[in-house]
Image 1 (cartoon, rainbow, N blue to C red):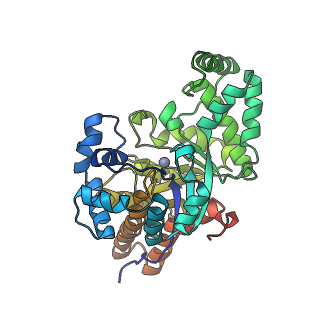
Image 2 (tube, protein in one colour):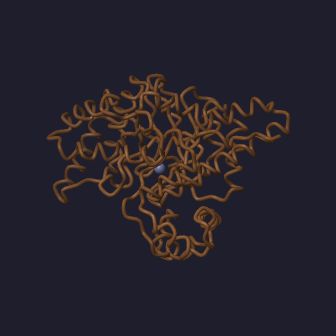
Image 3 (cartoon, helix red, strand yellow):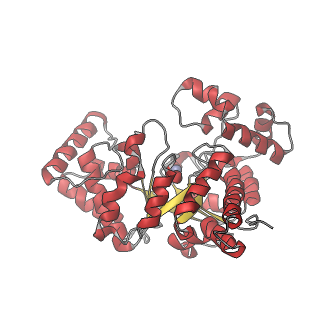
Length: 385
Ligand SMILES: [Zn+2]
């Protein structure tokens, strides 16, 4: 008998909320399932990806309708979004959600407590650093005040209700977060303020300033022993993939002062999964997130990802996620796919004589639930109602 993870309730260690208002026409619906800004890809090409077609088939099965997109959309639209999330996530059997509330905009999305109710599970949230920094740049009257406000914001974040940090620097200026002279950081701050004066807002792509503020956050995360998630690899073309390779994080991992900060490399680091697995194997504070929802991949590719990760990294450093965002279907399908594909990869390890069946079962439970449960301190989150 193979490894059976079907009864394991999962901790989704990286996901996002669901939008209150959902697209119900085919063209707009398809656009949920691509990171491409290209109109033709969003409206047409995405429909022929393996991932989209698998999702459509799964949804047809769940709702008991034929697999035409119109039929599937009509079935889901007949149910309110909270009710839909509740039905899907009950079926997915979630133990906890770790939510990045930086996307989608919380003003148009279900709140974290609403997500917990829908999942019948616990839910914790992460402080997304770059938007927090942008808000502080609007408030600060000087560079020195900005540093003070940043220190205040990133200290004692558990008391402020957060369970860790998330950084999208991989989307902004790349994962090689450097040390800068004060003069460079001040000049960069002046450029950001010029942007504020001109347009009333700032998109923090000013590398010396962003890197400097991130170092403040890293020191605080290490002091509080709080996990920090990095967007790594796959994303919209806003991310220069050459700067989003996890090997760019080397200086961070080599920094003795940051050893207390668990670093979670998101999205399988795809396509750099082997690089991510290597880092999780050699650095004591590196964790690799195995996401079965986004990137939008076939089951075969997700099986390869599982193999590559389990083939090199300790099972104690791998954590399941969906990266589900905007619609509840991604969190749902990913939970089923994650159990199945992780189980298949573990079966291979048993067949090869790497693991015993018991060891493989334990490894699966750690990746799907136990590692994240302890890393994010989920015991402290309210129990499901
Ligand atoms: Zn995400």
